[in-house]
Image (cartoon, rainbow, N blue to C red):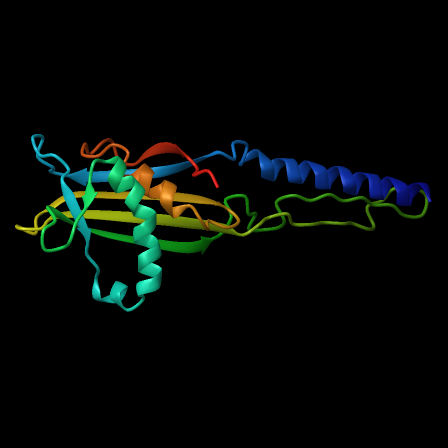
Length: 203
């Protein structure tokens, strides 16, 4: 009975420590940090002006998804000084895209579980004849958003920006803050890549 209680107590302690380790990476639930890269030759004297979205043929094949992505990018474009306009009259055309992919957790151990605990006992005292192990690694996801701004008249690419964020669990709802991170330094192509932290939208 004493051994069973000790086993249960140690298991509960390990679960608590593993949970704390997971939550440690999400200490601030109001911000998100992205790796941002930006490039371009936006003229120093040119104001942002008006914009319209431009879609690739592959994006036109899934209009609902692209609508949602463009809606997520609009606050960032407006914060940068742009105003929406019809495509035939806009100063620039903007392409936006996003890619989501799963990847191995940075905490994963190729030869065994990242977090583990074990006990052993046998006749005459502890001998390690029995063990208990567990894995506490949630799925790890990466979301990247991309922005390309072209002059409508000349078709010259004036600005390009990318923002990437990865975390354990879902990246749903992060497109909007990542677009803000991507354009936070517009029109200056700052050091790339660089960490940028923005607030999450209030729900």
